[in-house]
Length: 142
Image (cartoon, rainbow, N blue to C red):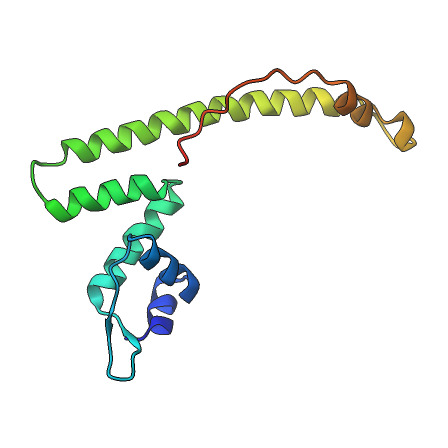
């Protein structure tokens, strides 16, 4: 199948497919005599795997790690479990950060009631006067 057909089946764009090939996540396709990419069922399966990992907010490095483990098919799934456990830990940290963000935004929103001139807006004043602590955002993105 051609790249457009693969994109349609996988519900993504041809640019996404090319990007995943360039990143080494999706193996490059064979080429036809006319130099068109020719994809097979293994590409569909791999692309769905990648897209599902991305839907779970996994980084390309995490996906690459999972793909290495699934391609090797050695030693059971202990390393896969460890990778997923680490990702869950990142998600937990991000949830805590988002909860803190919501508190800050709610506090800011409570500073303005009704229609006022922008110069009198409590939110604008709050954003100007707010002392934001320097903190390291916990992210696993590489």
